[in-house]
Image 1 (cartoon, rainbow, N blue to C red):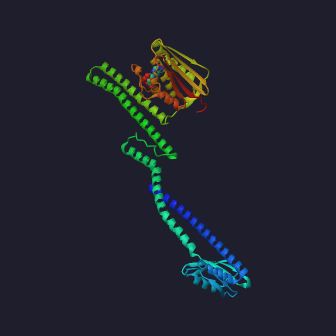
Image 2 (image 1 turned 180 degrees about the horizontal axis):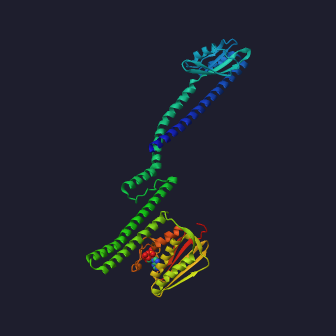
Image 3 (image 1 turned 30 degrees about the vertical axis):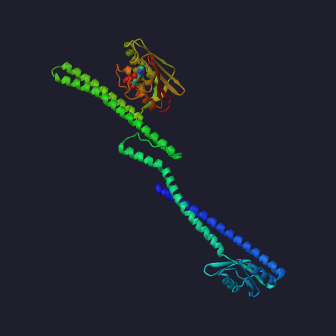
Length: 454
Ligand code: ADP
């Protein structure tokens, strides 16, 4: 890629250079021609004036004084016979040019003309009509122009070679610099594929513009993937850890029962323990799968019209007894109709988890308030308690899978309740937020947008 880019750059540069040189060559040629023609015209005019004023003898005198000059001067009669000719000094092609003039009939209207002489040589002439039908022709060897143009071409070639070399070096440098982020990107991807190490990043040192945006986005993507993989690793570790405890307990209970085959009541108790433990494992796995389904967008909602106030009332009744047993006051306040289209079972699961936590984490004598209201196109379910509260550093973490607060470990729980609540809220395009402080109780607000149709 780098070589191809350099080749393209050099190709285009050479083409531009050739066009530039061509244009200068053409302009120089045209300028030299014009200057030559003007000079010839001036000479013709001067000698014609001399002829008109003083006749051919004066032309002869003027020409002999200018013998060292580069002009061929010829006066011919109406039959193209040479009356007078003066050849340019030291120009071997002069006699040939004169012969060419004598063998060719030039009309007085041909003001400028060129005759070929020798091998590739030429003479350029200006021509004018004198009195008596005679012609005055003054010419100059065209090779002078060719020599200047030749010098120009030679200089161009001399300049072009180092310039092209510099362009090649510059092109290679630029291509290398421009493609460096792409090479870095390829190297990084290959490194990740080979080692699985996601903490590699691409340097932004040599990037600018769109490539810089690409590098930044790529690094961000890597960062996100790394965080996701880390998160998944953490969840897997936690799941493995959290599964080991109930399964070890299950095995212990079963082994103990097997050691006393005659003890029927003991065996039955062991079986009941086993069922309870396996229930716990199944609940944990099901909840984990529910959360994953929401995160991957695979959760199927059975949408129907739900009266959220009624749902909260049923749950408050259900938890009323538990609250009473724990010496808590549980109150519900529902404002007006709070209906929306949602998955009733999932919604029940979410509100139940919030209520369950409130009852669980509020010590005896405390209070739990459940509020339901509809506002700004949303149904809000608020569960407020006067319990142990959540320290500020845990406020974000309580939504993580399998996270359990330090002070909560004495209570039963899997650390999955709030993750599921948030997942269900998100599956309904809503959300769940918490306000709390240590010892100041907690207030969870579940927001579900009001929908009229499934
Ligand atoms: P679990 O209750 O099974 O531990 P959750 O996901 O429901 O798991 O809650 C995560 C953590 O959030 C809890 O361990 C607890 O520390 C904290 N938490 C949740 N609800 C409350 C609450 N009402 N009061 C105080 N802490 C709470």
